[in-house]
Length: 409
Image 1 (tube, rainbow, N blue to C red):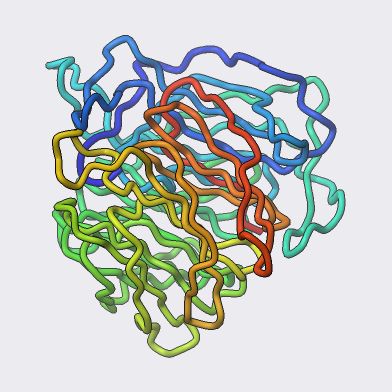
Image 2: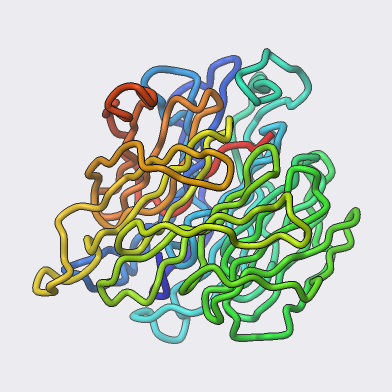
């Protein structure tokens, strides 16, 4: 969600298993904010609400929730508040906001990073699916559980893990820093911070290039995209910034590392907002094209094969009904990509106050989160020569789905 809210759970409760995990699966992890609801365009705190994390098997039809645990989550910040290790052994979930202990009618910045054991062995490759390196196996007798709760920085929002599975970065919106964490198997340790030199810059999301040597950071408060240099666990701000549009927010990098796409969410005054493409083959990287997509492009994700870009647009569905910019539904937009150019393939109505996007490994299935309905919409990609996308069901969540990711291999 743009500027407004995202909470955290009062504590971490026991896991609730909803179904037995299959022997092998591609997983999606959805972080669900149970602390807030949107009522006629106004975010209302639910003091008894609980945040949850849903673990979804994408290797079955339809995709199914196989487990759910209680863990801090938040709808504040871009819906990239989840990261999964390439081995699918762990997931990381951030919490940008929590209920203020001094005033339960308000929220305050949170810094928690939850490490979740996904109960995968991570040791065997089951086969190749498109660009993916394979699927892990469930560990016999184990169920997903919380391994640790760590501290990132204030307003911990977007999080990413490199393709080597050895390093994670967290964008801290409320203090202008990036937290660094090392990963060894299922052990995650804090390894310092990168100071962007602007405490109110609002770093929102951070993403690695496939080679792990560079990362990009969106800064929605000062409209910049910063370049970080990565060498092992050493991460430095290069002082190279790009300007794509008003309030760059969500960001994704292609699996080949040739381009990045950025959602510029604007200032929420009813104007149509934009998505920009960054050419990463040029030195230094630079913004090379921008398209208009509609009001508030909240979620953005490239398909694993790099051919498509999916965008969830709020379309005014988060505004009061009396607003001239209100619309009953958000939109899921799908674009085909040719180099650094995007062309619209499909558009479908979805729910309200919609958030993150995830693809399956085959680049044939799209998940779109919708907060108000507390569900995830499923779409099949029908292809360039047909309608584009078709509906394939929904997944109910406990709390509003606010962030989602699959492993990026």
